[in-house]
Image 1 (cartoon, rainbow, N blue to C red):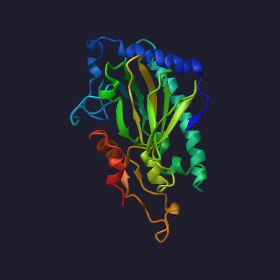
Image 2 (image 1 turned 135 degrees about the vertical axis):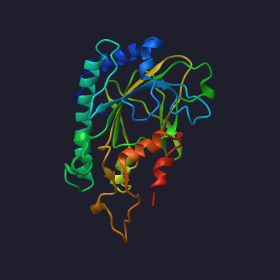
Image 3 (image 1 turned 90 degrees about the horizontal axis):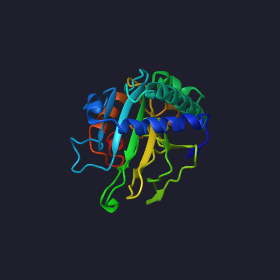
Length: 270
């Protein structure tokens, strides 16, 4: 879904420009952030998980853990202050959306916040840079996958590339200017016992222009065990569809393996 929001367009544009500046830094300036573990505070590199992939995908990335503990690279100048404000604002947007989704399930407005401890929930800032690709028909920006967590908010420049799987077909997702594309994550599917479905999506590349996306992934507390909400489970008519798993374990499992559709969610499907 695409939403209007209370995040100033000027803040989004400033964030985009600073992210581009980060990728323009020299390899030496970025060398401290070439992390290996999926929960390192700051990581940058290429592809998704080079230790298990047969090919590199056409993408450079920067991943930062920004909540409950805030981290940011020292360069470029102004990145820390702008990213802090940007992530705080997008977290507020996600909080309001989760209230509405909680009520839509017949739960209390603050049910998700209380049960999944989202006040101390994991938020990750993910910046993706997709340069022009000489042979886009032979490459992929990101393979088909669903996101971990509850809600992912995506802002992008004017270059498209995101595709959503709908009724067996890949559909181009065209975002409106000054808007967020919102993806439902695996843990919203788990908590809702399948009433909400996480979104299967992928990114295609082009040979003409650079695509930039600034993403905030919003999830439960790392220590929260996510299970279907008890009031949404009826063992005769609506049995539980997923077994519980601590969020941290799920993140490490998904991020340590090759992206492959909803394969991680399928591992805990009953």
